[in-house]
Image 1 (tube, rainbow, N blue to C red):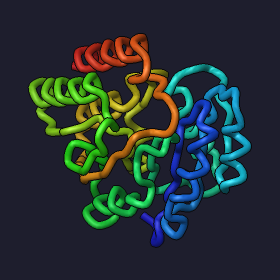
Image 2 (cartoon, rainbow, N blue to C red):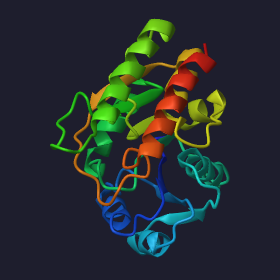
Image 3 (cartoon, rainbow, N blue to C red):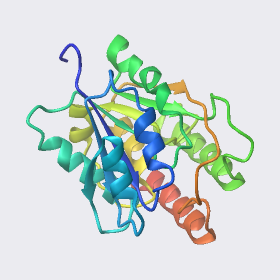
Image 4 (cartoon, helix red, strand yellow):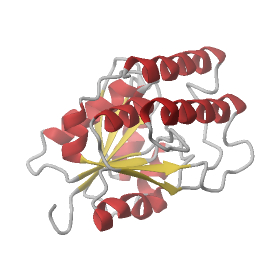
Length: 231
């Protein structure tokens, strides 16, 4: 890995004009080389606000969290100088981007392949996670421990992974199962992993997943389906 390493951040976003600028501006730029926003069919000014804040915007019209992440990965793979580390973070400002050095540290210091920012280990603002989110994390992480012998406490979106490892595990989920697919594929490929505590606050705007009954049901289905799919 180069010194300093090339760190690229990918932010999937749809209709996040109120928050995306805050996320991009809070990312510690001495650490990060490029910020990519995967604009997932936004109908508002998400793209314009992200560009003004200093991000590269790539458009993905097909709806789905995974589609937006894959589009960001495609852009990163075509950069003249390939990244060493990819960081994923949501565009709703529920995470604290300034904690990014803590999320990346295990890769830089201990050569870990995958780092999950765990909201379960950090401090959560009251109301920042719904009951279905908390229960889903609890159930999914215990099933992963039972069937895959990996110990996670969260499926949190704030995470860092070595670029080569990410490209090798073959991510394919296009929608709600993106985060758990990465952790399951990492287990199947025997990647080293760890978690670090991250804090969490109420998001700006309404969640497209946990904020709707349909989104909650589909996310739960995708998570449970993925756990048994990759056995």
